[in-house]
Length: 234
Image (cartoon, rainbow, N blue to C red; front, side, top):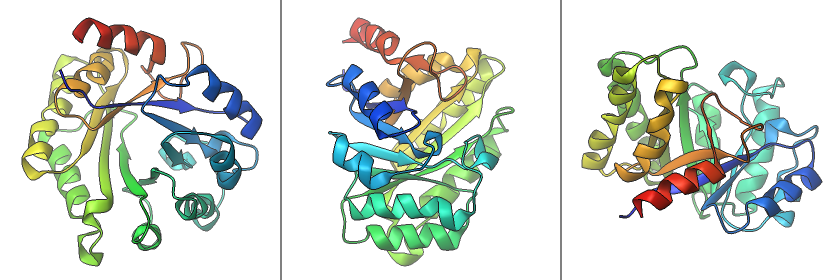
């Protein structure tokens, strides 16, 4: 059964720490997410030089659950450097400044990098209509500057019950019908199953952590556990 990509999220204070973690997951992840906001001094160029394989650079703002507390101009700089280094993906929040989003997309125009346009809700799972509105906004993003094809959507909510989880997974069918690549799943214990299910329901990518101790989001599965589950479905 064909499945979506597995991305492992790595967080470390410097390039050396991230390299050590990357060695532990070598050959077992389709994409490595580098959490630049976990570094004392975000170093996109250094990470690109030291790490192999498809890379996703995320410099998550504190207002969306991350650790970066500087200005938005400061936050985008290592992502622009990552684009110049031809990384596979950079993450930018749907709620973030649209002018800066367009700046990133413009930089990506003649390069292979794609944007993971992300939206997180750390409190609950909104009604279906609100989720569909978020998806529609993602699908329209970049179209006005001819860069819609550069965007991969990411919608993550917090599930408090099974219906929350099902509501998010329903977005997968709509995205597929529109030909839009989408990663969608839920945080929280009731949403853990969505991190596996999305891989087999047309989801573009799911995210795992290095181990059970080092998580970058509530309810995240470790890479080892996720591989054991996918092996059962192989």
